[in-house]
Image (cartoon, rainbow, N blue to C red; front, side, top):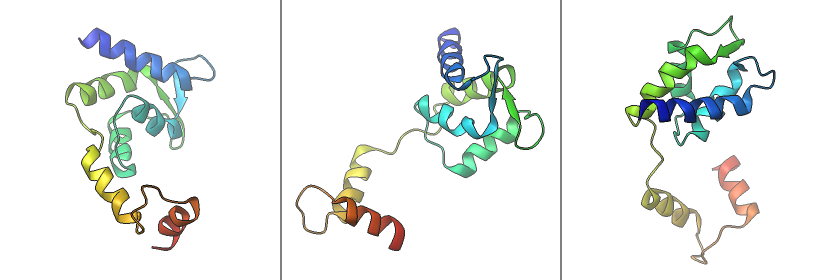
Length: 114
């Protein structure tokens, strides 16, 4: 199981390893974690980064430092997605006309003004 998880993490990491040198830009970590089915908020991503030894602030993350931290996250089933019923309830709250959809304009309004 652990070997399977590590393989999955390595494959996701390699997608963002543009130089093929087992490192990624620290700003890519949130995307990598989310691509693995975990959905941390930005503060939780920062907590993960605190556990990983990052080369200089704003630098790079090495796979060998990322792998054990992310393996534990997946084994512990941390940062699970929000349940569908909660998302549906939020959608229904935004769908004021109860028409089953939200227009782009309404969504932009809700996200930027309210």
